[in-house]
Image 1 (tube, rainbow, N blue to C red):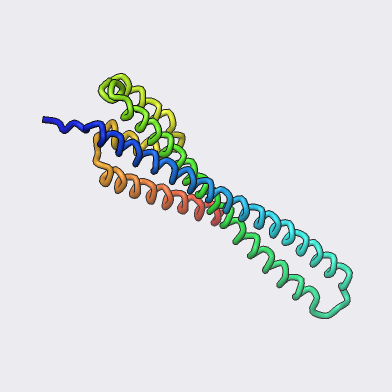
Image 2: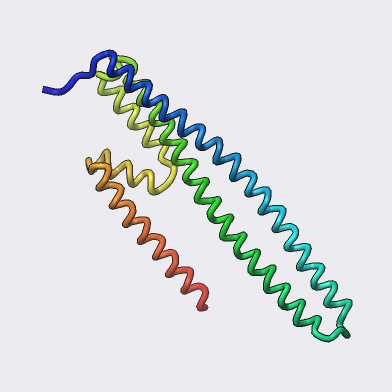
Amino acid sequence: MPFALGAKEVQETIMVLNLSVAQIELSISEGDNSVNTLIDSFTYMSEHIEAIELSSQKIAEMSNAVEGIAEHNQSLLIQTNDLAQKMQQAIIAFQFYDKLSQRLDHVSHGLSGLAEIVSHEMHAKDEAQWEAFKSEVRKGTTMREEEELFELIFDHEKPAEEAIEIMKVRMRDRMNAADEVEEEIEFF
């Protein structure tokens, strides 16, 4: 016999779902503020690295007769290039944060929709409501990994832990394949 939640349990479930949504939304907001500050800082540093490179080249042109200037100029250009590469890596990390933020936003919307269904007894018992909800969640999966995770859990009825492990393997394989392609390109 299936377990039926009473009104108090349903209300507590809704409050936990709402708390989860609020925590996710606040985390996204705080993260966005921090990332925006970092992006501004990296943009500022990038502009200054370009200015340093230009100044170094002008100094080298003006000081052709000075002994060792070419070596110092080359050293400075290597250092600014290294800094620019590190900044590029940081920008890629920001892109990963953006994906994380999008996923959390999708989770937040899913939890809000779940709270809405559970809060109405007639909706909670209506199969059409659940199918419409699942359809909305599926439409909200804008990233490949989200769609695959949805399929594993809803279409293939895999437990969450198993679906997570499958996705970790797939994502690791994709990263390795991307690294191999990148390495091949670098050699040509």
